[in-house]
Amino acid sequence: MSEIHADLIAAAAAVREQAFVPYSRFKVGSAVRGASGRIHTGCNVESASFGLTCCAERVAVFKAVSEGEREIVAVAVVTDVSPPAAPCGACRQVLYEFGADMAVIRANLSGERIDAVMRDLLPDGFDGKSLDF
Ligand code: THU
Image (cartoon, rainbow, N blue to C red; front, side, top):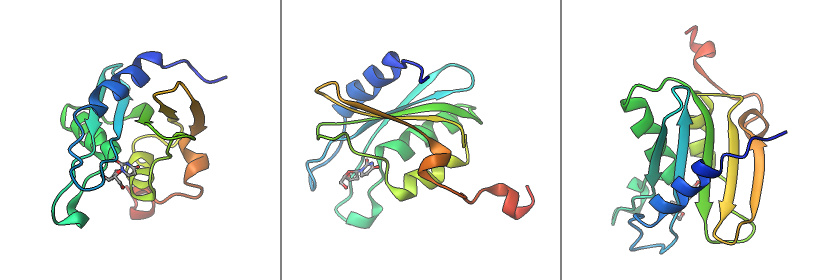
């Protein structure tokens, strides 16, 4: 049974308003809950050199890790599309390393929500074990 994580979704919806999206106009907000219990948020930040854009999820992960988190137990991703958008492949890879069992919640502003577990979104994922860490 999935946990509620209503506070995580609310945090992701709030930070979504900070998205810097002059090119796509597609706002994304994300929030991760670290093992410490703290919530860390991120929005997508685009660049005029398009390939340098960073997704909301990775901004949230990098903020969390830089604040000392080493495990993430849940991530929320909020957009305004239906069905709620899923994390991209690059973000799945980065998230996976911090918790193959993390809850992945995608939601939208209408209250739709889809729950998954990271290892199901990235089967047979690559992580530090392959590097002998
Ligand atoms: N985007 C995210 O922030 N997260 C994803 O998982 C998929 C895509 C952003 C990147 C870009 O700013 C916009 O959405 C359109 O691709």
